Amino acid sequence: MAQQNSSCQYIPTDQQKMGVPLIYGENLSHIFHAKQDVVAVDKVDFGIAEGKITAIIGESGSGKSTLLKLIYGVLEPSSGEVRYRGWLVPTRKDKLIPGHDAMKLVSQGFDDLNLYAKVWDNIASQLPNTNLSLKESKTRETLDRLNILHLAQQRVADLSGGEKQRVAIARALVNEPEVLLMDEPFNQVDAAFRDALQQDIRQIVEDTGLTVLLVSHDPTEVLAMADELIVMKNAKIIEQHSPTKLYYEPNHSYTAQLLAKSNILSSDQAALLGISSNHTIGIHQEDVTFAENLRGTFHVKDIRFRGFYKELILSDGSLTLHAILHPLSNIAIGSNVEIHIKKYITFV
Ligand code: ADP
Ligand code: MG
Image (cartoon, rainbow, N blue to C red; front, side):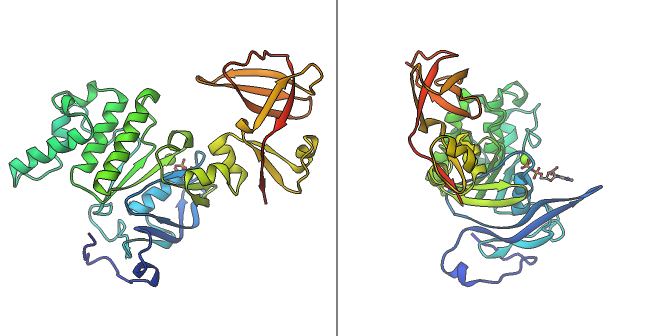
């Protein structure tokens, strides 16, 4: 719950009284004063809902990690503010130990873990010795929640990437923060174990009401997990919505490319497909259907193996389109095809 902190200035706003997001940012910027000034976050506004999973997505260098650090309070805003339950988030200059008390950050890599200590000790060390039986039961409960109780006596150094990440999350959660922040949490987790970890995090959110905010440069890995996505491009937030809304109805071609690897066409290129539009359009790969036809104007330039589907590269000499190849189709490189566009998105 919100605690009075002498360094926090409390200004309840009308928005807050109406039950607004748990965390919100207004006109928030951060400039790194390096050899050349770098505007890493540029006048952004956002809201993070309580008890939900929000993912900040965007290409490398778009400002995701900087935004996360501003929210946590380990970086100072150059302008604007971040509020948590209506309270200004204290920053380094206000606080001896950086980081908001109600939040915990799991950083990239495993910097916070003691690799040569046992899993159990990495978690238990976060709790005070004032009540040893509580320390024991909380450690056990947290390891159990993350499904790593069986690893308790192993050294962290001997674990897989996915297991280490579970330890890092358990360590962050043992003191029951209200918000868990994670920077690229699935980077070092094998794809085969990613889904289970994501489902476990979802379960914790459902069971405890925890708020999760995570950063990812590969949105396909968080699409199934997040309730809300914040899209960053060149230090700006360009849109924020549910994954389904942003997948099917993005406002920006950048979002369509990021989420769906969509084909982005200028209005001139669209005209070549018989689509008349004054604006750029996006065609998701699954919306390009095709059939083998000797007189078809497109031909199959390449077929890329993607695991449970294949990606087809189609070309008519001037235009290149990417499509999903249905597993049973026997189309080969060089085949001529006739294409049909099921639907497209217009970017105004
Ligand atoms: P992302 O997490 O999306 O990859 P970052 O927030 O790390 O992006 O970085 C945003 C921009 O700020 C980049 O151009 C990056 O080079 C720059 N940047 C990040 N950290 C620093 C720093 N400590 N000093 C100077 N520039 C930085
Ligand atoms: Mg980053």
